[in-house]
Image 1: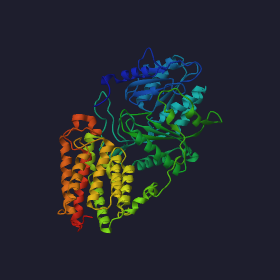
Image 2 (image 1 turned 90 degrees about the vertical axis):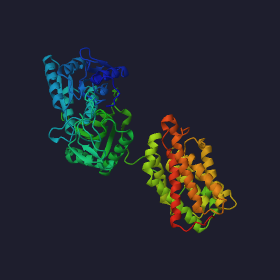
Image 3 (image 1 turned 120 degrees about the vertical axis):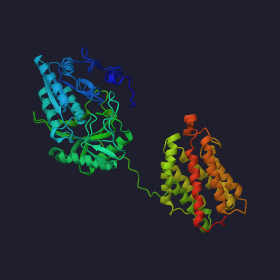
Length: 592
């Protein structure tokens, strides 16, 4: 177990200490260290709202204490309900003449402990009501309280701040709960600190559907799918089982909740897929809320909550202003104010659907088309480029694995993407115009690769194009000079040299071999490429004993030793593939 904690048995107290030091608007109740309230409690003329339960769901519930949300929260041990005495202390600490509403998630332990505390408080003449929240469609016979509970906190908190009486808050709360539906999916279990092992384990290709928030498994296990299919399944399940009002009004508040460790990138994709799907089904997303609001420790996954944005107040003839309540100001530290949006039906900025084969800067270097080569040489150029691209695709996993040991682990993926982009254009590129083609390749690699590899491959082809264009004729020696100018461009741009443990340790020996061999008329082109591939391989292998002085691998110092440089390996892979061209083409004597 790896967690940033001190004593596994004291995590809740340590967390509360941290909350109090980072949020000066909170205070700890004198009699119970696990009870936190607003600094201005008890409230005199407004209904107080209390929630709570086991810890491990942070920021729920203490993170939502503040004006416009909760008045107090009761924190049990991890995934363990708080005791009645804790809840009673919270009631005493925040309740004034207007009374108190306990917002309780539908779990047996929470219901029992909060109910006993409410009974004890009533004996002491406190005005107390209980609202049980159940929104989990995975358990339809007795819906558990999960992420949708936070929407209840926000809406009722806003209403309470606007002096709504207790009886009306309770009535509206029940109406909210009746229209609130959530379903989630988990990609991993979670580890209770005091236990030290995951609650359940999932193979890499499986997911749990309909999980709870206490580390328990879901209602069923399924194979992993693309996220758009997962979102489609969850949303359709909610819509099928929702109150008819959800389908009738077609206006929704949508909450995308991070279960703990799902990345911001993934959450944004989930949110986008959810909005696109709902729009396609004719729904209006009045508010989209995205964030980690009710978690299950470090569990990976997400849940989707849908709530109609038009709900009638049965105590009056009015409709509850759900959107107004969502937007109502709050001082709660963890309410994601800047992640509450009214998403557009279509993205505000839609890229023009340009022909991907047209370079907008093409007119600038159209003069490069004036340099031409024979049809046979153009075919050879094309076949060599195809072989190189296919070799990068075939070895993408190997290159990625190498890069993960000394870099950021993306080299294989990025080179594969660039190679695929080149292959998409392969039949459209005019290879009989080599300078223009090389400039085109420079642009493709520049746009496809990104990172540091993009500029390096881009300047290589850029320099080749420029040098070949300036040559009096495009024979083998001119091509060799162009290749050398390419690696000199990389040296100039990145500052690396031979022996620095970079791609140049394979590229320079290979190209220098070509330069030397290009003047030897006894060697066929096949011989020249074979010699260059051997030099590229030797150069790549030599990086194993080097200490990197440039690039990401230089950041880890001695730890990069005993690993082949992934950039050099990629160069070797390309050169090895070029030998295969000559196994099927009768071009051994072609040197022009």
